[in-house]
Every structure is written in structure tokens, then in C-alpha cells.
Length: 89
Image (cartoon, rainbow, N blue to C red; front, side):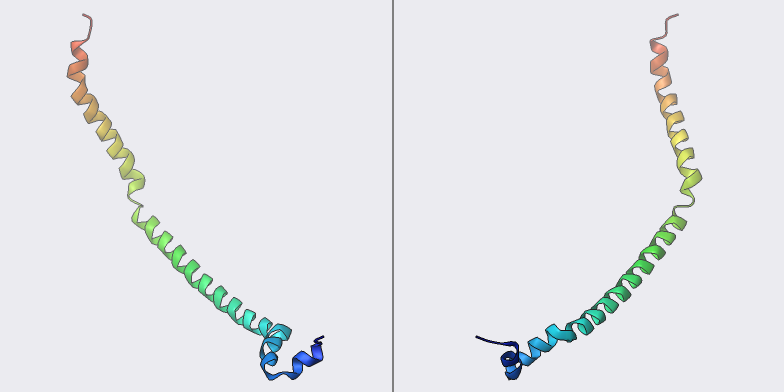
């Protein structure tokens, strides 16, 4: 039967055992710090892209409704002669 003491005496078992007994926390903390840094970089880039996009779309706040009204007026002007053909009178 293998015991903990017999596992620690073998040279090839020391590395995995060290990883399990504490080194893994340090490795995970480094990974977690790198991941957090990457997330912050991507979050900053995303927010900057959204800000730029909203600035580019600023003129459409007024322009889009005006274009929609112009299209509706032109459509009505084009249809009006056909509608007058059906007028009772």
C-alpha cells in the first residue's frame, strides 16, 4: 500500500505533489491577474468604440426623421394622382 510519505520520497512525484500542495494557487493567481488585465484592456477598447460610434451617429438624431418625412411626402405626391382617379365626384 502506498502512503503519502512514500509518494514524497520519489523524485518524479515531487513536482505534481508540489503543484497540488500550493504551487497551483500561485500559478492560478498569475493566470487570474493576466485574465483581469486582458478583460480591462478589452473593456476599455469596447467602451471607446461605442463612444466613437455614438459620436458618428449624432447627426442621424435629426436627419433620420427628416428623411423619413421627405420619403413619405414624395410617396404621397407620387400616389396622389392615382388616388384622385378613384375619387367620387
